[in-house]
Amino acid sequence: MTDVSMSRQGRRVLFRPGTVLKFVVLALLIALIVLPLFRTVLFTLQPDIIKAWSDVLTGRLSTNLFYKPLGNTLIIGVVVATGCVLLGGFLAWLVVMTNVPFRRTIGVMATLPFMIPSFAAALAWGTLFRNDRIGGQVGWLEGLGLDIPNWLAWGMAPTLIVLTLHYFSLAFTIIAAALATVNSDLVEAAQIAGAKGRRILMGIVLPVTTPALVAAGSLCFAGAVSNFATPALLGLPVRMQTLSTRLFGMIEVGQVGRGYVIGILLVLISGAFLWAGNRIVSGRRSYATITGKGGRAKRFDLRRARWPLFMGAMLILMASTVVPVIVLIASSLAPSSANLFSNWTAHYWTGLSNPSFAQGVPGIIYNADIVRALTVTLALGVAVALTGMTVGLLASYTTARFREGWASAAITQISFLPLLVPGIAFGAAYIAYLGAPIGPLPALYGTFALLVIAGTAYLLPFSVQTGRAVIQQVGGELEESARITGAGFFRRLVSITVPLAIRGLSAGGILIFVKIIRDLSLVVLLFTPTMPVLSVLAYRYASEGFGQFANAITVVILVISITATLIANRLQAKSQPWLKD
Image (cartoon, rainbow, N blue to C red; front, top):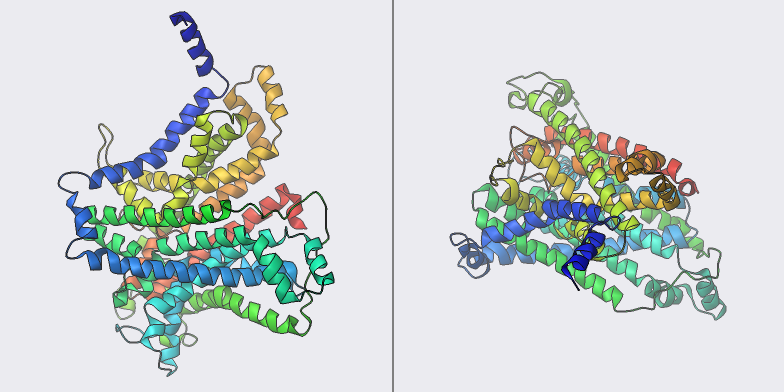
């Protein structure tokens, strides 16, 4: 082949439709996701830092630095994943496959706990169950004269309970979707053959929903082991460390190398369990539940157990949704946690600075730090929603319209990589990546730009998933017609794709907005006094003993999150009418 023909072939490949766009998107994703993680690893391999690996893994302090936190982390991950699958699976079975009363009410309430930040549930737990082990205010139950044992107030047990009640809604969503696809003909055939309900459940329903059970357990495990807020609020006061809290502590005291090593190990552990879950599912192929033959829904008749099971479900849902919200609101008005429902005052909301009350800290309306944090948080949510949806739309458009080639596969894999990275480890990676100058580029630590860039990268899997759903709604023939008439890529995207799918894009952007404003794990290491955010400020107030202020800030976050989520659900219902059924 001559040089001329090779040159022509190279130009044909380069100017093949979508090639330039693929490489632009791929470069953007590498800069946002791959380079931060790669730079973190390189940082720990520097000659003066590499000793941190031996300090963490084999050194004299390795037991306290790594192995004890690792044991606590694995216990939390396994127990929470198991509890979430059991609770979420139980509620999904009730809603999808039984005649339990008020099925729709249970279904809606079962999706709410994941909307409430985990630190909100942890704060509510402390307000109710805190005892005098570490001093300061005691909780409401101790104030009533009850003797709350240490194991229930602090440490592993409350951490497991709070995280299970937080993440089970994720398992519910996944398992309910799988149960809805179980062909009723299988159940009817078993009933005709004389099989009892328990036999049908264990022999038919559970086996065919195994992929959903494994996926739900894997995601709940990953979420639990990476959670920072709950073990920090309920475990750190009694020196119970997990990998996430140890990572935070190392960087807080300036031992950055050890912190980055722990972060890398945390990523590897989380990724390994997610990979193992995928391997378990992919190792078997007998999960088909949707066939060409239709079947009507078949529900188990609970008979006398209908109302007892309904009451059991509502008890779980009330404990995970209604009770925490009521406790947080009451605590933001009560003079102390011990007197939760008496002598309410609006000082923590509207009070001026008074040296004789709350150590002179003004209410959140007049607190300059909190007002600034609210402004920064809202601006951060809007900015990350816009940038995230823009990058996500570009990535999903590229992989949907130009599927051929290794570049499209690489874009898909890289865009979902943040799912394997715990938030606090991702925040640490961005400190290593942009916390110091890179050539002519200045250090971004402590700036709004760093928060936006890190938030955009961390939430990219959600924005890509939303973008993919949006692209699938728009027929390719519309863009093809515009391309034939000479319209360029950006003209087609702005004039056709975005207007036709604006509701779906808006809903996706709002959900990203909600995720970032209530996130603590990602931003806790990026927080600075000059660039505060509400979630970290609530954590700081709680850590310093100002529980009422922490709870009041958390109520503000809840109101914003729930309002935005309801708007997003309404937009999704209008853009996808089948959701109304």
